[in-house]
Image (tube, rainbow, N blue to C red):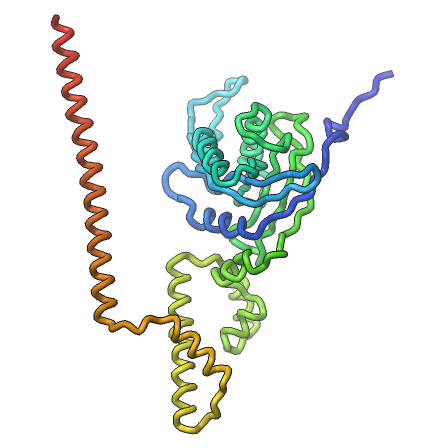
Amino acid sequence: KIEANLNFGMSTAKQYHSIIQPQVLPNLLEHSQKRETEGNHASVVIGTLLGTHDGKMVNISNSFPMSLKIEKKSDRREENGKANNQPEYVFDTEYLKKMVKFHKSINEHENVIGVYISSTEVDRLTMITVQYFSTLFKDKVVKSPLASPIILMYDPLLQKNRLDIKVMTVHSTFFAECPFLSEIPFKFNLSNFDKTGLDVLFFGQDHFDTMAILDSKQQITQDNFSDMLKNQRVLTDRDLMMKNFKLLIQNLTECETYLQRVIDGEQPKNPEVARSLNQCLSQFTRQDLAILEEMVYTNFKDAAMMNNLGKLQMAQVSLTERINNLFSASVNKYLSHQ
C-alpha cells in the first residue's frame, strides 16, 4: 500500500497576524508615484519592509525602496535548446545590506520582515521577488525574526478607490520556483491617529468620497460622478502645490468678503471667526517686506555659492584623480623600460 503525502509541507506552516503602521503607506505611494519609467527599470516598484515580531503579531513599522532592473538576454537557451527570451531581474543586494545597517543604527529593534510590491497580480515577477527574499532569509544574508518573508501587495493607481492591500506569507516552499502563498489578516494601527498622517495622505489624492463632493460645492451629476471615479489618482508634487495655492486663494477671498461685509454692516460679527483670524495672523511676521526680500535674496546667493563650491570641489577631485592616473602611468612606463 502506497500513500502519497500531498500537503506540500503546509501542515506545519504557522499563521501570522499583521498590523500596519499608517506612516508606511505614504512611503509606498511616493515610491510608486516617483518610479523611474525610463531605461531598464521594471514596471513595478519593490522595497523592503521593516518591523518586529512577537511570536504572534507581525508589526510592519517602516520600509525603504529598492531598485529593480531588467536585463534582457535574447541569446539564452533552455535545456531543450529553445530560445528563452524571458527578462532577468537584477536585485541590488549590497544596497539592501547598507540600508538595513543604516536603519539599524536608527532603530535597533526593527529587522527585515518582508517585501512590498506595487502590484495586485501574483505573476512571474512577484514569484521571482518572493524567491529572492526567501533566499536572503534562508542564507541569513539579512537578520529577521521570521523564517520566511511576508509580502505586502497594493494597487498604486487606486483603481477601486482603495489601495487594495493584501498581506501574504510563504505557506510552503515545496516547489522552489513557485512557492505557495497564503493571505494573512492585517489591520491598521490607528490608536495614535494624530501621528498617522492620513489626513495628508487623503489630501494628496483626487477621490470621489462624500467630503470631496461637498468641498467642491458643485452640483454633481451621474456623469460627473463616473468621471470622478475613473480619474481619481495620487497627485504629483506640482499638482499638490497648485491645489494648496488654489485653496489658499479661495480661503483668502472668502475671508476678505466676510471682513468687508462686517465693515459695511451687512453681516453681524462672529467672535469665533475673529479669534481664528487673529490666531492665523499671529503666525506671520510683521517685518517689512523689503527686509524679507533681502533675507531671501542673501540666503539664495549663499546657497548658490555653496552649490558652486561643491561643484568646484568635485571638479578638483576629478582633475586630481586624472593627474594621479597620468603620473602612475608614466612611472609604470618608466619602470617597464628599466
